[in-house]
Amino acid sequence: MNSHFFSDFSHVVFPKSCSVSLTGIKDTIITDCKKSEVWKVLILDPFTTKLLSSCCKMSDLMSEKITIVEDLFKSREPVPEMKAIYFMSPTAKCVDAFIADFKTKPKYKAAYVYFTDYCPDDLFNNMKMYCAKYIRVCKEINMSFMPQEAQVFTCDNPGAFQSIYSPKSQDKKKTLETLADQLVTLCATLDEYPGVRYKNNMVNAKALAELVDNKLAKHYELDDSGKKKDKTQAQLLIVERGIDPVSPILHELTYQAMAYDLIDIQNDTYKYKAKDGSEKQALLNEDDMLWVKLRHKHIADKTIHLQLAEDCMQHFANNVEKLCKAEQDLAVGLDVEGVKVKDPMRTLLPVLLNPYSTHDKIRAVLLYIFSLNGTANFSCRRLPSFFSRKPTRRDRSQDQTYNLSRWTPVIKDVMEVSEITILYDVLYKVFAVIISAFARQKHKASSQDDRRTGSRLIIFVVGGISYSEMRCAYEVTQAVKSCEVIIGSSHILTPTGLLNDIKALSKGPMETFTIEERSNA
Image (tube, rainbow, N blue to C red; front, side, top):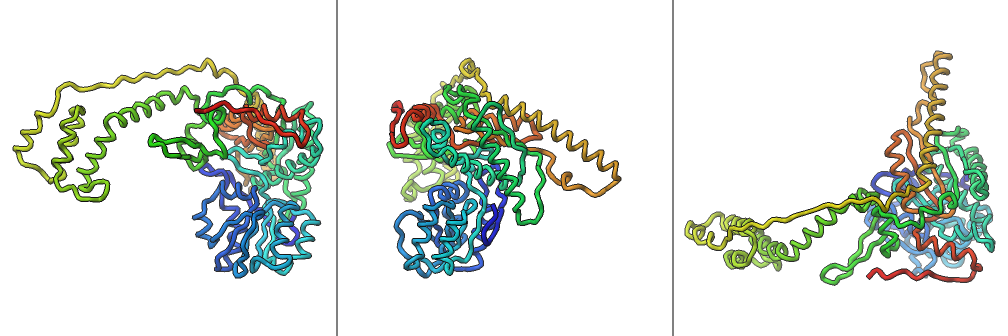
């Protein structure tokens, strides 16, 4: 995985608040470009577009003097006075598009090239042949996976299921090679050299595990630090979708899994209509702290809050919306158009004449008094006649049932068993270090002591993961504080998506099909 003429092995962590940290990208791409104060163009392919959008906004790029973001494969106007940053995958299609930008008439003043992974020699030589004098920097940043959540990643390859499992597949070996390369960049990003294990009697898991193990050994032998990296405490466990065919097709009743199963959510974006009929959309990602807090909760655990929100909106529609307008006018002294409220009593009277509760009317009266900095006694004496004596009360109830959520995904059992194995390994290593230290009577800390006391279990499921399995990674991490579980796959499955994948197994490479979605109206 070594770079041809510049090497950079950036370590990007999975932070709590974002699926991938901007730090690693800034430490390479942005730092190099900061040496020049001119504005630049950023050119991305579809994969790096997703990767970058998962960790930063346009405003972040603007602050780093990046003024335009362009698609590598779309027609672009030349900007010969500007420098261009190319962040792309090391594929023939990407490299050919890059060469086309400079081969005849250069579109940009210079190029800073960053690959997500190792660039093959033939592609690199083609670049050097046609574009060498325009390339200022060329680096490989080893980040060819897609961080999905704090503890979840994918290889952004939904077609892997058919490529690996279809009897008519023509690219199974290539797909496994690509997945192995992506897993190596994940381990490098996490600064882990894990032991690689696979579930017995799983041919594809075994093949992928062997590829990853060999590529990891080669990667760390070629590390530019000049030192051969020792194995870390982490374990990489590779299993196949067949280990648990049940979880992906069940109706799951935790919030995230239920939403992605029953609602048409595309690219993590929930689209809906507001009460006024306008189209709204919300991005369900790590930036939405409420989503992060609730996504793994059983729907029954949220019943009271859903009911509470519904009750609030019912009150808002019945009374509060009109009250809010009057209250705001009295409090601010201006109406919604910014016009000064000249006669606050005209704002107050409709509240007093309508059948609002006594407390609501008192609140409005107080706002009226405050708006005038006090009021005459005769006005106060006139006001009590508007109030009734009968208060209104509201009753609430909560109903929680779990009878329809008895199933626990098998992957959780696998995680917990693997956790025990890792803990035994860690304890053995700790005792070995202690015994060795006493035997040699050395006081200097070893490199093993300098590492974190916790460990990581990385699970990769060949053929897709379900949202319930993603949830298990968080649950096991929470239960076993000393070990973090990270789970990933080629892609994320929904029940409908899995049925489409299975149906595709009997189809030829060029045949298409679809399973009709039920209406969400």
